[in-house]
Image (cartoon, rainbow over all chains, first blue to last red; front, side, top):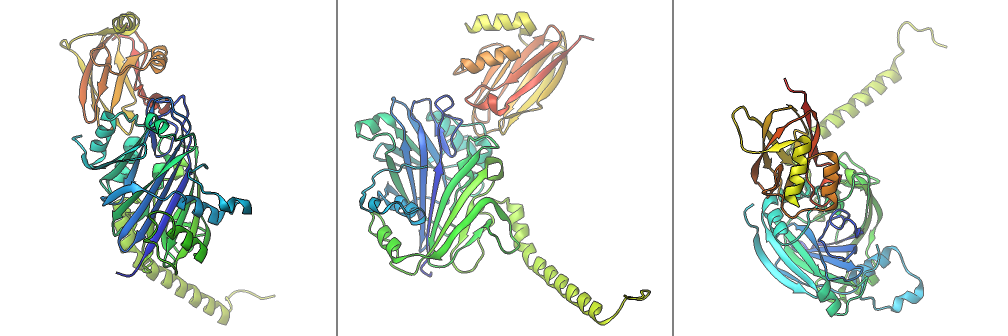
Length: 358
Length: 132
């Protein structure tokens, strides 16, 4: 298999209201504790069939409560461990350079924006209890209920949306007491590195709208680092081609990755699998009403230019239709172009009868 | 407290009980945090057996009461409604029945008061029409 690397980072501005902790955050599920989640940071990578997925959590205070997050995964992780401390910040800096004097900081926190599920992995990273589950929407829902997660009312539809594609979910519960005991302060984050063998990488975006009102804006920064210019589905603006276009997703940057960026990412903890050169860097911005965010971002960095409709979250029927209809559509477009050309040619060589001319 | 609330509800709108002959059965499905149907009509004096099926992968509630009582439930959420007349807590995939006799015309609401669900719109209406 050719060497392929994909980095994806999603940085979402997520705020939990004290008054409605289970209702106000995207992709994150508040329990009845006093902790407010400010932001979740997610980072995933793809190299030789292995997706490297990083999620970082920040919190705003203790109070003895807990909060948690459920993250859909494209496959069963081989391991879950603490990620490097500054990879995400470095990616952010790549697209929003700070003042020069900030270059010497050693940032250790992120501060911006029915039956039974099968437990296939449990670990603790810092103050985070991580549980990887395998099961359908109902099984994961029961597990969440039994483990104190207060699921928001739109979670049934969202859980089923993901369970149709992958039965793997990662639940991360941040124990605020443990966090305080470890000396974590408001705004400190704990990055998690999930290593997932998969042939089908995707970036979960719809989960960011979980618990949001239909008109609420969902914002995220998505970073991709591949060794080829990636094809994406749905296509971000400015879109070309005839495929589905992503509402609210804009391709802000698409350039070869700088040597400095690759060096910095490689030298962070757990970054030694990142190739030294030849990467393509893409930066996408998501700013969408929750009601319009019904998709994930499927990526094909193989050069084939065929990102998966299923991985993007399109219903299987649509995926099949697109797969089978696409060649016909090209034929139809070609015939239409030929007809237009012939019509123009005819108009150019003849005059309509019954006219007198100027 | 629950008993007091149940008595108050009964005095205002109807009574809970078994399923006497002539009981009308109404099935209500819960799907994507919505009640289906969202509106039902009954006659005053009619005993209705609500057969509620939770088709969602999360737990829900069925709480019958006046609009004012629904707001009170929002302010003080109960961990479980089982055993309370006119109410039920439904686990994932569970089905339960709630029987109620509607004594006078008016409007009642059935709702779920798990965090955020009522505000999300998880409520239905019972129109109690004058008796035949």
